[in-house]
Length: 381
Ligand SMILES: NC(=O)c1ccc[n+]([C@@H]2O[C@H](COP(=O)([O-])OP(=O)(O)OC[C@H]3O[C@@H](n4cnc5c(N)ncnc54)[C@H](O)[C@@H]3O)[C@@H](O)[C@H]2O)c1
Image 1 (cartoon, rainbow, N blue to C red):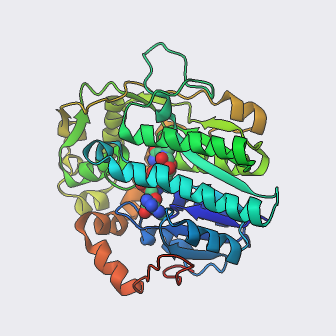
Image 2: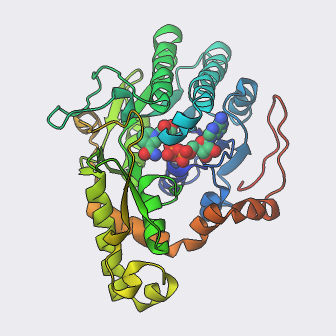
């Protein structure tokens, strides 16, 4: 029976992982530690609120003492580390937060894990799983082979550079101090609870609202899309059977140029609204509500600096070693994701219109943030 600390468990992938884990492993303790930055959303944990296994802690991964206190108090033996600043565009405008959370924060967690699990408890029965990105490998040309676990690092943005630094620290704590670590480098995720600043949820919301669909450059940047549920299953396999010190790439095996992805989404919305008068009434600004094609909203905008051209993941290692297979094809995954956003309109409306902040005030008590020690719990518990 694992006892988990999930950092960043109120963010997109972390919250999907918490839902997945609680469904697959009922009775196992899960403590979520999240600073609730703009990207963290307690509403995403609402469906599991009240589960006795779950505790939410509002706190910062940079607080080593507090993390160590949590590990001791809850007798946690596993850290699944999602917490990060994760948006490339934001890292171009303000890199400092990325170094602070992704590098200093990851190091703070490693120090806490080493102190409690190795120095105090001297136990080998622990695991620090670090969630990283394929962006650490840099950019591929059209006919380059996909990234594998030994591809040299060549990060292009402050985001990917900070993730690369954290990957090296995790590896060093294994080699130097004997911490049982595993790392996964995954491709672009998509699915439910995705903050609508990232490509797919931004496009879905803008299509429904009849707003422009901004596509960088010529739109030919290629990403390997991974449904978040497949990613969560990959991490679950690594926790169960991965070898300490190993790195596993996780991909969806579904390369797609951004412009093709946006056109596919437009086609899905065209079809859904053509077939459903209720949706046409709910989203009157959507071109499909008037029988027009959503593609008309596509607008090409100036490319971002250092924009990597192509990412592709070779996930042969995790397939061979752990039996991983991505299950959700991109088209089916996009349809499922579109349906989730349509069915969960209040979730994204509160994120976009700022009412999430007032919702949180009425549903959750304010949180004390002591310099160290375990703060009182708020929110889902
Ligand atoms: N989203 C993707 O496509 C993708 C792809 C590859 C790798 N990753 C990695 O997966 C992880 C999760 O990504 P995501 O998309 O869910 O990110 P996200 O931005 O949606 O969520 C990040 C979460 O971390 C929390 N957080 C930020 N700083 C914190 C701090 N100092 N202390 C505690 N909590 C803090 C935020 O409040 C938020 O809940 C990240 O490490 C990211 O680098 C993401």
